[in-house]
Length: 237
Image (cartoon, rainbow, N blue to C red; front, side, top):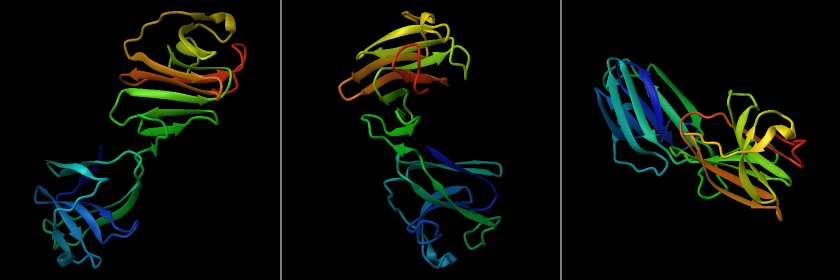
């Protein structure tokens, strides 16, 4: 979900142009005197080219509007992975015939489209690891393309690698571990419990060196990830 917040008592507008970087023609959400409606904006951009119309855009849905004193907020939902070029404008005047006092154009990139089902977004972490998630969801995954062991861990102290609770895949099998330190002797198999984390599945195939750890998470989490040939060394983290 996305929002445009204006500190203006006049009309405010969010437009989705036919041509990126151009103000019109465009489909727009415009609030005038406390009421939000859909409009189309012609290429001339004069007041007569701004017409109330019920347009449909697949990348822009569920729009809403909140007015509080002189603060006006227009919200809408978008499709993850779809890049949207967005115009905005506002005016101190209360009617659409009033000239704008400010305007601009920005590019909204919700996320990089995922290449792993059922996730909608992804982020490349290293040359061998990528993170996956769904907008508005609580399920996440890290996929590794490497041989040897791979792991995700949830540290006791944010930004620290240890101590931590970890889930480690070795030889295509995964298990929970407690990681007290950086040496292999400090890594012991343990059935730890964390109310904010629940491992949901793993998929590991050493034949093609693809390993995926998926989990359910609630709230803000700090996550470590690592991979290597043996517990004594790591090749990426």
